[in-house]
Length: 316
Image (cartoon, rainbow, N blue to C red; front, top):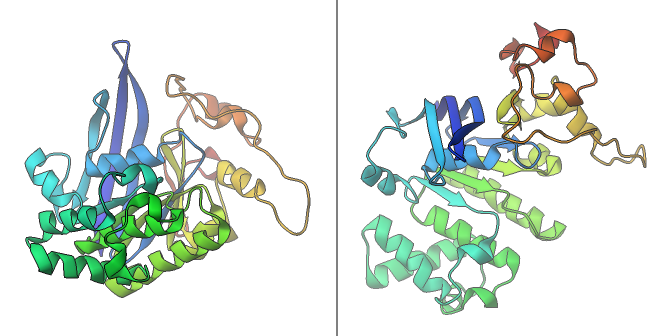
């Protein structure tokens, strides 16, 4: 059963009195208890799609069309006051850098308890007890004592656990994890991903997992969407994506990964387009080894291929 559905989302940014389109008819679907990975190069639209769900956009950003359906309501059309009740309580965010997300002037406990009191309608000792419970749940040792600590007294991995604790403290139905393992060493990365999987299974929480790391996506995700230049170019199960990638961009991304069979990495020639670059056809065409004449003039539609959807003229 779908808990969240993004339908034909289009978004533009205003610069020098001109709107430049950044998202093009983005369609994504998240099921209950599922982890959906969104992958692609930097600047492809992953984070701005996630921020559109929460309606945490820059002042010069404008959603021009589309719907984001959560519990049979369009999040883009409800009053902002109602949206503030959903943020944090029902849809939570785990940002990239926990150090800049935690206030260095306040203890971990005061920040966590504030979230609980705001969204759970419990105060005082009851809120403190709840804070200890969620810190225990994310496996922070001596949780009661660590409530008195400040963010700088935690390691990077432990700070990330605190952010995750804030996300699950209000029993959020959906957690958006925006590259939650960035700047963490490999061992800590594995611990954080194991923690997210435990939360997913134990609490039946749905995740949107934004990442550059295909290894983490392979290990953790149920479904995967590949984005390029504001388009979802391929959407399928994670297993299908790795076993049988279809879009030339997905194949090119997978070729850049190191493996034991070769010491040579295969980079993708060229650079992703800027938001100010306007294409009449496929935006990946200038970098694509399989490009055809039609790719220069017409944007490919989403074409069904077994259990996958791929936007490429090779499959039309």
